[in-house]
Image 1 (cartoon, rainbow, N blue to C red):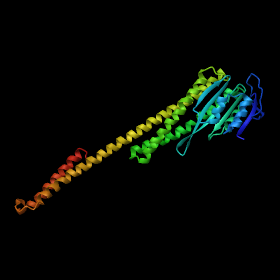
Image 2: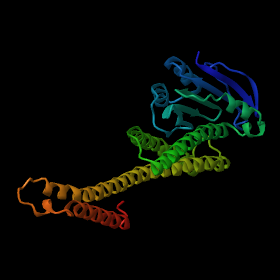
Image 3: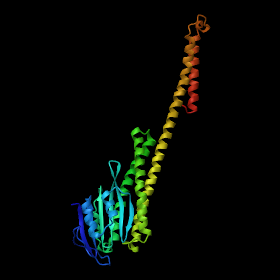
Image 4: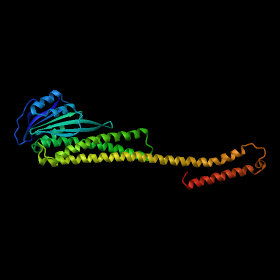
Amino acid sequence: MSVVAAFLYQHGRRVRPVEIDERIDCPEDKSQFVWVGLVDPSLDELRTLQKSYGLHPLSVEDAAKGEQLPKLDIFGDQLFVVARTAWLDEGDIRYGETAIFVGHSHIISVRRNSSRSHSALRQQLEASPALLHQGVDYILHAILDFIVDGYLPLGETLEDEVLAMEQRAVDSFLARTEVNRIFEIRRQLIRFQRVLVPTAEVVGKLVRLDIPSIDPEARPYFNDVLDHVRRVQAMTDGLRDVLSSVFEFSSLLEQQRTGVITRQLASWAAILAVPTAIAGIYGMNFTHMPELNSAWGYPTVMLVIAAVCIGLYVRFKRTRWL
């Protein structure tokens, strides 16, 4: 059985467990409702919930299929919300899905491939009966807020890695593995943005639109979630910009260092060309070379070589080629 928790609540307090095939008639004041939590349910279990709570077939099909982008669908007086969970696993962003059915007197959450349980969230809400008493729309807010808050550690961890990579780019050449990591993080951030944008749209609709089962007084709570989503979006955009800057900065530094090495090699090549040229002239083995018979020929040539080499060295030193 994939049912993690299924309870009837009244006036903000847990009353008793319920079965998924049990239909509960609740009053109109939203003080009594059913909260069912499932993890990787089978299609038969979803069909059972569909019969018990009148869930729309299309929403049940989407919840059973999984791999949906965040969205908000309205079916009569019921809502179907899909949110994507995200977390880091050995440096890679992994994704899960939480589908939420919201009606006047029920809220059903279906988690797939999610690493974070809702047990702590349920305990937190049960410890605040005044908030839980407000109804299912406040639980929907709590679940969405719980999911979005999970994005922040992910962004902060990647931010620390990117900043460390930026420092290494300043200190030395980036290795090929680090360059590959830059592009890998950038690809993952682009994919993460494809989750954040529709998530912001979903929460924005809950803030702005008149939606069934959502109390207008709950809109400021959803607006807080929207602020969190936008904060993560801003962080993600900033990381992408930093990654581009790190790669460009690393390329510029590499070109600069290559230019410095090239100038140094050219300077030493010019200095060494002087004795090489003179030695080449005197190595031609001609019979008649006047300097060969001079007593001062050898010291004079050596002094000329030394003077020219020293002069070139001083010249290159002044121009900062050496």
